[in-house]
Length: 135
Ligand code: SF4
Image 1: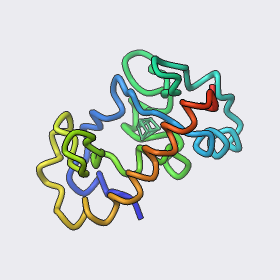
Image 2 (image 1 turned 45 degrees about the vertical axis):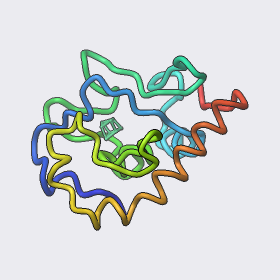
Image 3 (image 1 turned 90 degrees about the horizontal axis):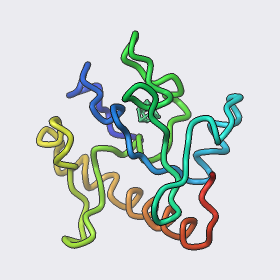
């Protein structure tokens, strides 16, 4: 199961522009199995998290010609749940207000993936705290 962005965001793909998507070791393993090298598409950022790199203002894996993700089936887990994010202060999952399509998310869609988003956030934090982020 993943959020079906194409349902309400057929073309924009703002989330693939100037991306700050964090990745886990599992994400990197899955992507590297396609022949990529971690250092090509990701970099270490503040807090010891690893994020996808941008090239010419968009994610390394975004294809501006087709407006598609080149690794869609293997994309990072965070990309699968976006625009659902975990809000620490409110202690709940919400649609990211940076995404113009967030208001179109249904409560059911958010509820259905919230436990996965929370688990992912914990995994990212654990890897960063132990210096185990993928790059
Ligand atoms: S990996 Fe794919 S879905 Fe995720 S930000 Fe990059 S282009 Fe977009």
